[in-house]
Image (cartoon, rainbow, N blue to C red; front, side):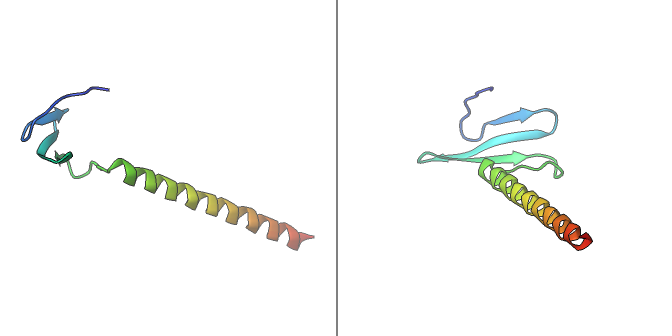
Length: 78
């Protein structure tokens, strides 16, 4: 992990087209601005984790539904 120090209004550039700028620092809070291509998805970590958990739950429900459908179909064959 690369760790850099920045002051207000200073920035970091990643590659050719991503810039991260420290907008303000106030009472332990840091506001950060991102300048990146619109097709690049930028998410807070907690939001990414929440989406991942919801996707896992959805997949489990779909799998459970498929298993139930197969059991019902197998019972009809009997």
